[in-house]
Length: 85
Image (cartoon, rainbow, N blue to C red; front, side):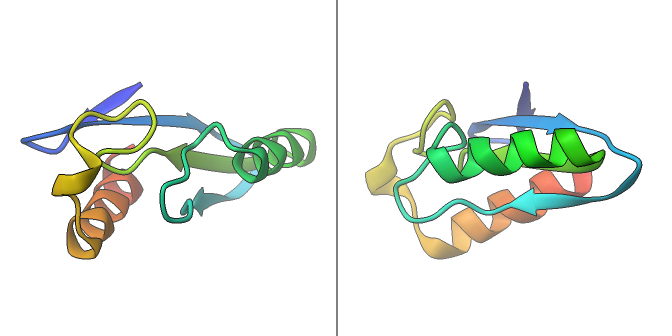
């Protein structure tokens, strides 16, 4: 799935659960299909916990060039995913 932030479509995956969810914030130059993100996704599914993972602009399946990114922009990406997914 994708969210449009106005400039760069952001790729994300989300599933709901019986309890409040987790928003996974990946590390520098990582993506939502990394080992940690996928392991936490499986764990949350098994336990009935909502889980959202996403790719920052310029990472993984999201658009944009990594070299155009900056911490403030990636923080905005996380905020957008947290409120609009």
